Length: 230
View 1 (cartoon, helix red, strand yellow):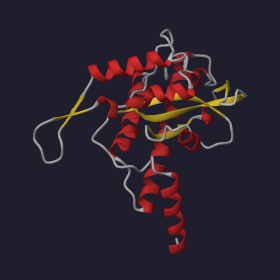
View 2: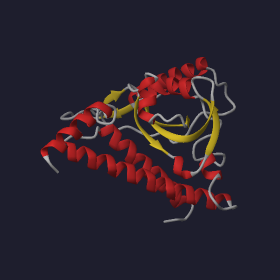
View 3: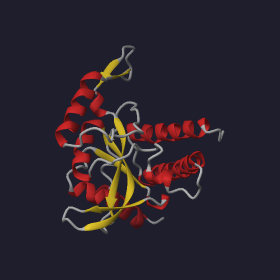
View 4: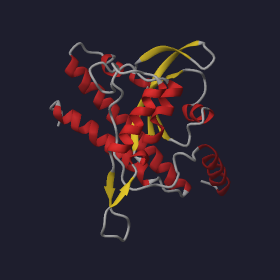
């Protein structure tokens, strides 16, 4: 690769990838769940839920060079939020930035190839075809993400998840197994791609984003193991 190519890559990277390669924090946990469809979907209830979660939960971790644990605010933990994203010709991270969510959304995994589709209205009231996307979201920003993209009416990776129901088999357990396998491959591919890009450009992926990928892969692996695939 020529010096000119490296320079151009660095320029592109600094312009479009600030969320992906922002400074990292200590180890986070991943949420592969979702909202309870039976609960109210108003923005007020989302804020109330997040506020309650922030008060009731905390994570302990030892800072570098210290033998004593330190409290890390729960709002700084990364969670997986699955949304319907309208096919509007705009890249997902660009759309996130235009909505002012780039301070809480660190990464996005497009699940379009898994087959699930839906009809939604975009910001201009136009009905468009949408596909599912997994977002790595700081817990403090979950209500903002739902406020802009809407709260899904299913729990991710549950029996009602559209990407599970879309799998080409009739048996529900086989649908889950096929979905988990494809999802695991997708996350593994995207994780490797981001690591390679960071290495080429001389950047370091933030620790919390690495842990988000690794925790998600472990979670999917446990689901496969529970189904007897390992």
